[in-house]
Image 1 (cartoon, rainbow, N blue to C red):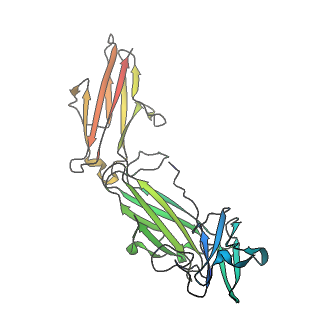
Image 2: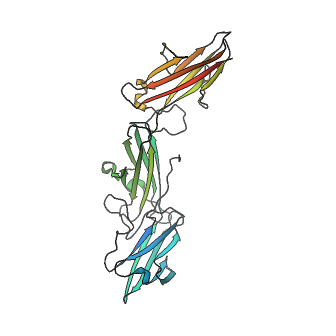
Image 3: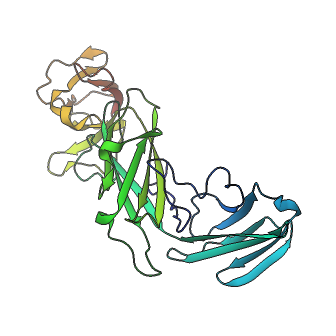
Length: 331
């Protein structure tokens, strides 16, 4: 799984504005009669990526027409049927201006495409439980609230970016416009995931500056997981050894071992309502006054392996349930 950073995408100037709340398009689906239209592919290129611009027209056959291409003020290619031109986008902030001239039917047609490379990445977090000091990301489980954050760098010049608070954010969830959370300065988006492991939600956002001359696009997939139960040795003086989870513990006869339980990724707001059902060697543990700690005492002459299982669940949240087991070797 990727670390929560997702690919950077770029916007367009001039004829590449955004329309309504949909995904930005480089050009209309079909060029107007009597014109030549430039189409950028991919629609949202990455920095330092090779892109292709293609000339389309209903007024003439581009494949049978002499076309001349100009890139950033220089004549770069020309020829009959030369309907496309490719180039590298370069670093973020780069400005690209590409023009085409077509000589067909004693008429000259032309179009210009201008865009500046901008960057954006998304990060997200789920409102689920993780223990103190946990350095990973809280994963979403059934019914969890997830918040997605956008970090755009919309370049208005080669070295200057727009203030993120002044940008316009257009969020979508599973291809449905989220207008209630979109608008100026709406840098984050929240939603509740569905029930069931494996369900995947797609969140995307288009960010534009005020005059819609530059835009950026990014998307992220968020997958629903199951809660997890992890076990840690809990030292009397040192506390839980969170650096290493384990399902196997060892203790000398006549001594004791304390195991700490952490209910990872259960809904954060329901941690105090969870029930813990311990079974030791198949027998239910009656003393559950400290359900997240398990103290196993041994006799001096005892030897062998003992097994403990734990089921954690919420009384009313059906999908908030997890189980785990440990073995304890008495040597």
